[in-house]
Length: 305
Image (cartoon, rainbow, N blue to C red; front, side, top):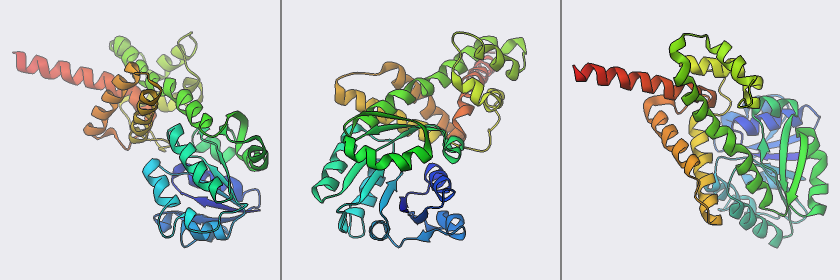
C-alpha cells in the first residue's frame, strides 16, 4: 500500500519505520526535509509538499506537534486541502483538542475524504514495535477502513466514538502520567535524605499501591532522573509535556472544568524548562523537584547567616 506520512518528528519517524518494515511504499514529508533522509535511503519517496504526499498516496497519516502545525500542513497553497482528497483516507495522530479534530474532519469530509483520528498512548519504542494503544475517533466504516494500518501500529485499538472522542481519551489517558512525575518527585524529596539508591526506591515504589506502570517499563530512566541525570535517549521531552498539559487545561476549560492539579504540575514544568530541563526526557522530572528543593534550602541557609 502507498502510505503518506506527514510529520517526521520522533513519533512520526517511528511510525514510518514500523510501516516500512511491513513493505508499504511510503511517501514522506517534513517541514525540515533532512528528517526524512534515513527513510528515503530505505526506499521511501520524499514528497515536495503535503499536497504532493496526498497525490501520491492511498492513505495519509499526519503526526505533528500541535494545532498550529496541523493548520500549516492542511491549509495553505501546498497544504493537504489544496489538492484532491476525494476517496483518500486520512489518519490523524497528533495530540490536540477534540475541537481541532472535529474541525479538520469537517473540512476533509466536505471534499469527499475519509477522516479518522488516532492519537496514541505510548512512546517511540512501542511505536517501532507495534505496541501502541490507539485511541480512535471516527465513523465506523472509516475506522474499519483504517484498521488494517492501525493494527500494524497498535497492540490495542480503542474506538471511543465519533471524531473528537479519540482526542478526549488521549488527553485523559496522558494526564495521570504527567502529573505523576511531579508526585513522584515530591515523594522522593521526603526520602532522598536516607541515601537509598534511586533504583531501590523505584523498585519499592513500583511494588506499592501508589506505583505506576511507568516504573516497571522505564524504571532505570526514572532512577537516572532522580539522580538529576539527563536520561538518554529522549523519547518525549519536558517541553512536549508542557504542550500536552496546556492542551489538557484548554480542553477542560472548553468542557467547563478547571484542572488545578494539572495547572500546578504545568507551573513546575514551566519552571524546569526555564532552568534548562526543556529538552530532557520526561522521566527526568522525577528528579527536578528534589534537586530544586535542596538547592533552594541551601541558598536560604547561605543568605540567612
